[in-house]
Structures are given as structure tokens and as C-alpha cells.
Amino acid sequence: MATTSFTKKSLGFDVEPAVTPPPANAEPTFLKKPKLGAQKQRRKDIPEGLWTKCPKCETMVFDKELDENLKVCPKCGHHFSVSARERIHSLVETCSFEEMDAEMTSVDVLQFTGVASYKEKLEAYQKTTQLKDAVITGLGKIGEFRVGLGVMDFAFLGGSMGSVVGEKLTRLIETATDRGLPVIIISTSGGARMYEGMFSLMQMAKTCAALAYHAKARLPCISVLTHPTTAGVMASYASVGDLILAEPAAMIGFAGPRVIKDTTQAELPPGFQTAEFLLDHGLIDAIVPRKELRERLLYYLDFLTEGRRQTAALA
Image (cartoon, rainbow, N blue to C red; front, side, top):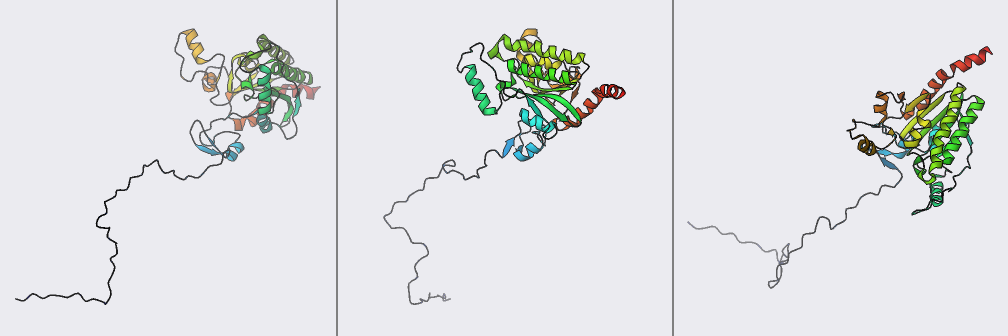
């Protein structure tokens, strides 16, 4: 049987192959595989100052939303630190706050020396915080109540209490006593200021004495403890209020946990020196979230001043 054969027809011109063959004498080359980290991946740059990472739940929070929420994480309720002026703005009526002793500054009495002198440190913190010292005091209105208000700022040398802090608070309390006003002190501090030695320790007795005269006049004092409130401040005016409030999860105590553990030679209970632990053991009266503080202060002021209002009405 004959085999059928097919002949390929030519179109009259040569067709160039799709792939040009390599030269016959060319040696094969191998491309080097690039490393994964060799090429920089392009990523979008996030501008600074727009987002803040919550240290508790690690959520990225838009700064504008955080400010509107009084620096409280909207997801987990973590309370960020706030400046003294921000606290005052969130509590008092608009344009009602009259600051006292605004230009009072500390003096380097002991001529403290070190890596940087005390005077240099004061100047540096005054520049960065725009404050003269670690507390702002004055008279203002919360709702219908006129009060003496003192607010500490941890950003200024850790809110430490030196002679200026003690003097400004004492003058505030004495002014409130003379005018028959309640006193509210919002504390955040690492304790007495080491740069002033015994002069800072003397402020503990001075502020407590002023509060004793305030109480003798049957005027209320509300102490608000925020994170952290420790050492000489906690051992003096912060713990002698008629009503002691605290923000959630605030660290409150005298000495640090390690020092207490080494001194007592005992294991410390879980949650030691937190506001919740101290509430359970009767050291503070209530834990008040920052967003509720203003309304709760109005409620407490109404209760604590009712007797004086009734006496004034009868007179």
C-alpha cells in the first residue's frame, strides 16, 4: 500500500522564526536570583502626629478622635496622660478660670549640680511645657459652683512637688478658705522634688496644715488621683481630702513595689497599688472615668455644700 505524502507549500518568502536562536558558539548564562530584601518595597508614608498607638490594646487611634474623647482610648478605655491645661479646659466653664501665682518659679537654693544643673533643668522644662512649674492653680466655675482648683502636670519634672508647688497649693487653699469655696486638687506626681531636699519635704506639712484649716471652716476638699500619684504627694494633701476619687487603673502608692517587697519580705498581691485594688481596700472612695468626672464633681459638690447653702438661706 502506497504511503500518502504531503508537501509544504511555500508562500514565496522566508518566515523568520519567533525566537532568534542563540549563536552556535555562545556559552549559556544563568541569571542570579535576587534576594528578597534587596529591593526596597514601596510603602505609604504616614504623617507624624495623626495617629497614636494605644499601649494597652495596641489600636491605632486617630488623634482628633482621641482629643475629642478626652485622651481616652475609645476601644479599651485606656486613659492617656493629659496636660494640666487640658484638664482645666475639660472641667470649668468657658472663660471662668482665673489663674493664681502664674509667674511663681523655683529657685536653686541648694545649688544642685550634676549632669545638668537644677536651673538648667527648670529652664528646659519651662520651654517644652510652657509652664512655670508642675502645678496650675486658680479659681473657676464648675457648673454653678465656684471652686478653688489645683491641677498638677506630670510633664514638668514628673509632677514633682517642690517649694513652688507646695506654696501655690497652700495659697490656693487659704484663698478658698477665706472666700468659703470648695477645693478640688487633681494630682499626678512622682513625689517630692529631690533637687530641693528638705525644702520639698516641708511642703507636705504645709499643704496638710492649710487643708486642716479649710476643714475646720467646714469646707469640702475633693482629691482626684490620676496615673501616677506616689510618694510625698500621696503621703500628704492627695490622701487627706474629704472625698478621694481616682481614674481607672491609676498607679497609687507611696514607695515602689520592689522597695515594699524588699522591705516586707513578702509577696505582693495581684494588682497591688492600682486604683481598683485600693478601692476594694477602702483607701479611695470611687473610681471615676475621665469623661464622667465633670458630672460626678457637680453631683458631689451639690451634696457636700448643701448644708452651707441651707444655712445661708436661713440667715
